[in-house]
Image (tube, helix red, strand yellow):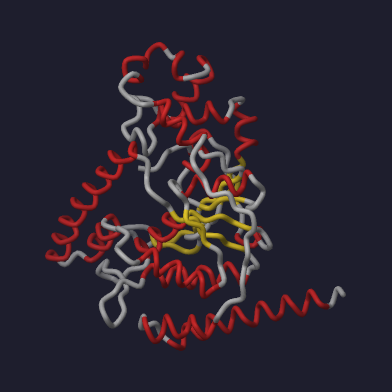
Length: 340
């Protein structure tokens, strides 16, 4: 559903170039879903290889990581593990949305409305068997580290910023803030020029960064209290939230009463959810303890072999992108050597 904290958080516009030499912990599922949703043909269908296997996620990972590495950014991808049982309602809600979108997509195709078809196709986006392993394999060939979280990937990504292993987490979801990410970067894996749905208009999507401590200081609340605000609005673990309570109202309630248990008007609803367990998910999630993060060299030959020979990518395009990356790395190396 996406936790909506936007109305109460300060967000600063930034550029990808500002993350040069910085380690960024990327919410892998979030990024891959974006690639699967955006990288599609005119009729809304995914890109596929000669055997009919989806390649949209691989295309997104390939070109986006070429860009990151060319800028000197150090990405780490964190993959979700088993979701908490409290997330089952949200998972079912998403499944129903995809089911309804599939029906609307088929109707739009029948009517010849490709614009509508593409919009509904994006709403049917789902991770299929093998996509995670394929994504990890491509990251290995790039020499980019990836981490398998025991539960929510955002929790481990946030912990990497808390432990000083990463500068920021990258995700579209504000949940990262509740998990304690010191800095959250949005629009990190989908920045660039995008066409607005149903309009012949394009906009530039720029990354934005949210500093957790700055926001807590500005709002005069604690991390525990922003978790309570999230619960009032509605999280993946209580997707309906509380009736007629949005971000600003939730903030006002916490400012006035301090915590959920002390807000008189919500007590009947509060008793119907396991709010203490939800707090625990955000504040005390099981995470991976990372000692060393190792970035390796890009294996261009193996990338070409995998994408071109096995997954039907254009050899010219893949080689051109890899050569551009190679020249950029060599140029930076030569510049660095001039200082010594």
